[in-house]
Length: 165
Image (cartoon, rainbow, N blue to C red):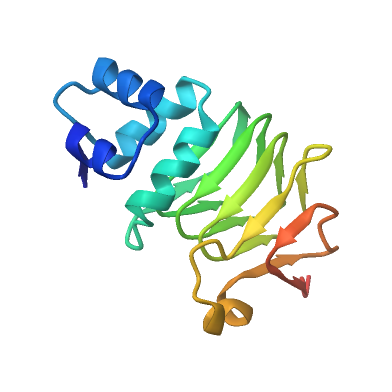
């Protein structure tokens, strides 16, 4: 999906966000490209806002061996990591997050549907973990599932299920 200046304005983007978007994407930009640029620009709140307006890409899957040494990772679809995820800032997925050994973020973790980790899920001190941000309430217990060996300390939204491993 291409994000345009007209869309940003119609969705009610703040003036500084509109200015940033105009400077970086004068002719508009593909949704994921804009999210990547927001990660580089250290703008997790703008990325979260954009994802709430543009929605999840239910078909897109980002498959990686591992994620480390990144401040932020924003993806419009699902994130699947074989080993583990460690970001110092914010991890946001439009659909779901799955990691083999664990999910760890310094600022917060958010997924439109569920979060699954083999070992554990950890957000930084005073930060939250949110699953099911884009799930209808009638489907929340079925799809807003957070699976880990132990219940994440900062779980704000999501239905925790103990991992069977």
